[in-house]
Image (cartoon, rainbow, N blue to C red; front, side, top):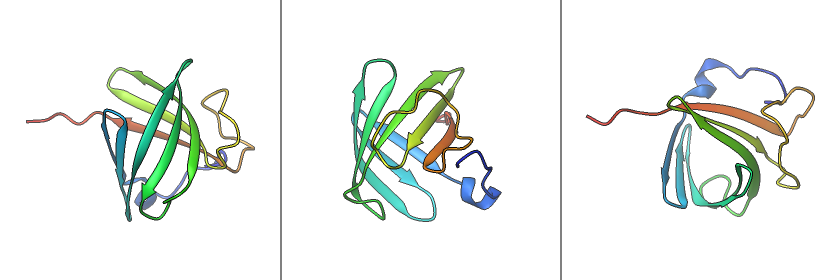
Length: 101
């Protein structure tokens, strides 16, 4: 966040994306809607949880089983790159695809 790594305990997140819906499970649960745009951008609208009513903008890419998302927590513009240094409201997350057995 803002170019600084978070403590390992803060990194225990699970993201579930189902069509245009999402659920994030961390220290709490957050649910909402995703609207995808051209150029690998998305708008995230939180409906339930600690972020209910908030709108986030993001840049994303999916490569090699990893989903990388750079969020702008103010929602006023889209990140232009997967970089958070010097940007205190930008948050970068990398998710590994879970294998269902």
